[in-house]
Image 1 (cartoon, rainbow, N blue to C red):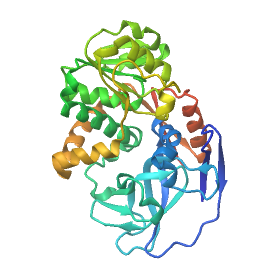
Image 2 (image 1 turned 180 degrees about the vertical axis):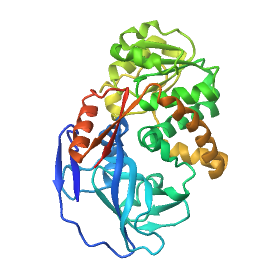
Image 3 (image 1 turned 120 degrees about the vertical axis):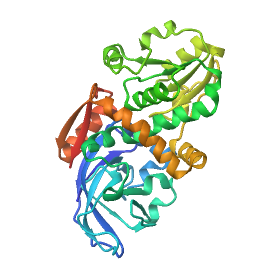
Image 4 (image 1 turned 45 degrees about the horizontal axis):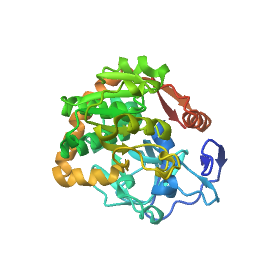
Length: 358
């Protein structure tokens, strides 16, 4: 069994670790990981791992070292659970590794929950595994897209839903930093389809302007250095970039025209504020935590209604991604390690989605 360890204090530092297999526990299932995507979402898990307990899902037992969660597919290699047989395929939250042992509970035809004790204190959202044979979201032709965009798409869906429930706080425009990121693209799509009257504005690095424009999801795309060109109109901002200086410039430029400031991404709130005790002009930034909002939407729409709403929006999005994102299949955990480090360094190509087969 192989895995990638990440230095929690310096997430760009990684190492490959080999360990012998252990006996499979009673009622447990051993998953052999088939594939997972490496995205900026994984960097977020690492960067705020202590804040939200992301390091606790797959503990290493080694001080200062953690395993970054990934979203992907796995096959049951061995089973001591009478309701789940070897050879079955699942989708869900997986470690950057070759194997994972889980203890299935609440087993249904379409999913089960990992009841392993160390995973219970965290959000139950991450402990669910879809059984692909009966999973209504599974499409064999779009497994890559589900790994690359699926969790990020749901975050975008939930952000748009949150704003729409609040009537967009009276805003006319939605400003998104890191507009080339997959979550920003998902949010832009959801706003385009569900709130078309809201102007969608993307901020990105100068080198990514053409890519972001090619997506067709934004009314306006500006390079970061052109924040001053933002119209002084009632707006909401969603910051995916985690750049305190950029966020400060948006707040300073829009001031009271900024009706809501939402933080989604890879740094701690204190770092987002740049370490200054002085408040930013306009509203105080608020951190978005997707599982909490998922619970709210499920309560509003019901589980079935929520699933149907996500599926309908996802279908339209996934059909368009092939126009601006190419999938790069890579093999081996060493490739996963390299891709993760490249993403941490901000050098990943937004036009390429990386899928690893460990």
